[in-house]
Amino acid sequence: MTEPRHSRGTTGGRSLKTAAEALAALRILGAAPDGVTPEALAAELGKSTATARYLLNTLCQEGYAVRDRQAGTVRLHETPPWGETWGEREVPDDLTRYELPERLSDAVTELYWRTRQRTYLARWEDDDATVIVDARGHQGLARIPDLAERIPLASAHALAVTKALIASSGTRSERLRAQSDRASFTGTTITSTPAIELELARVRRRGYAVDREEYAEGFCCIGAPIFDPDGRVAASIAISTPARRFATHGEELTGAVRDVAATATEGWSAAESGVPPPDDPDPLAARSVPGRA
Image 1 (tube, rainbow, N blue to C red):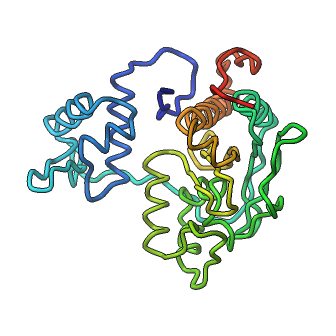
Image 2 (cartoon, rainbow, N blue to C red):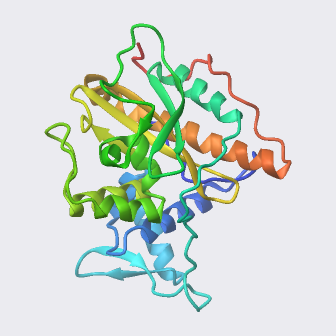
Image 3 (cartoon, rainbow, N blue to C red):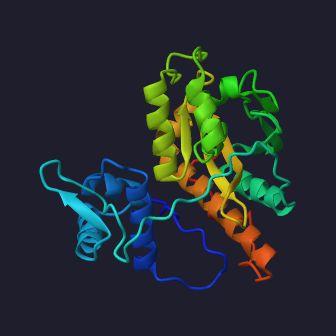
């Protein structure tokens, strides 16, 4: 199983694994106001239930979290151990586009070679639209029907590449929730406001988005956000894959998308800070997803 990467460090230096896991657990708790169970945390972190339980016990003992014994869940404490209040991450509410560095095209290439599935890089447009600015795919690789380079907000609820962006934008999340008549592209399209709210919360908690034949029958997509050096979501990277392959290799494909997105975020921050990023991986190295075409 590909181990999820939750951290978005700015250097290629060594890190303490247990500390990274504890910070990831805090982020997951922060995105779940009703709390999480050890089993749910284990699934999010890709760890055993015992490890998740130890993490939650530690956070409770140190004053970062509290346990609801009746519900069997753990949630963030109302205030952190140092007092005052938890800081809220600033989410840009403007609708301006981000100029993406050229190195993100390398991430698209890497993800394509790792999965051999059609790969996309998207960013905001000046309005509520999302624009696919780069893509990879070999001849004969199936395309998502009717998917244009410019994806309007009216279609954003059905695609992973857009959900990965919208979940981190307060303005666009609100505008998506405010839509009264959402299109149902397939029988699995999420259209109700409560379901969309749960979906966006799930994307924020997991750090990636999935659509399971929600835009086109026979196609599934996996997307993850890429953050700029200021910690704001600026782009998303995604793949589309036949539903039958997603059913057999979804976990590995998801791991590849998340890994490449995290590496792209780290490389962007390192480049801006003047710190040499980690050596770029060889896209042809034998670490591709099993069963690729």
